[in-house]
Amino acid sequence: MTITDVPRAIHRGEDELPFIAVGDGTHLQLLQVDVELGLWVVRTRFEPGVTIPTHKHTGQVYAFTLAGRWKYKEYPEVNTAGSYLFEPAGSVHTLTVPEDVEGMTDVWFAIYGANLNLDDDGNVWAVIDAGFIRDFYFQMCEDQGLPRPNVVGA
Image (cartoon, rainbow, N blue to C red; front, side):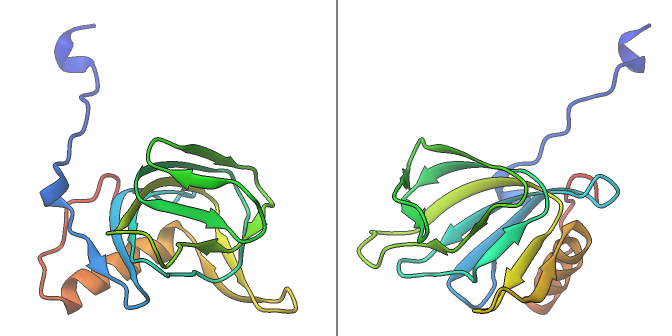
């Protein structure tokens, strides 16, 4: 095997993949997507006071907090800069960022499977998976006048 036969690492600079304002106080950067594997890797910046809908994960989730502070309403632990979080498949929770956080809370997530957004009775009202997030991200970039980013795997 020669060096030309070895797969190369894929690099993307922070400025190559834009953050898009979703409209609910979250700002999303899609880093990698693999629809066949069901993997989506995102970096999300949350404004203070944001609460995202209660959701259930169909696969495992890995999270690392880069800045700020957030927690799940259902659990006592608080994620701060440097915190790592593992979420097993089937976990249900409501992500919230306290109002008193200064600046954006910045979190990296690697998500397998789908987020099933749940209503107050536990019924699914939205499904967010790798294919959805890829299409949503590209459409939001287009809507915001940004060129189509070169997301890993897309």
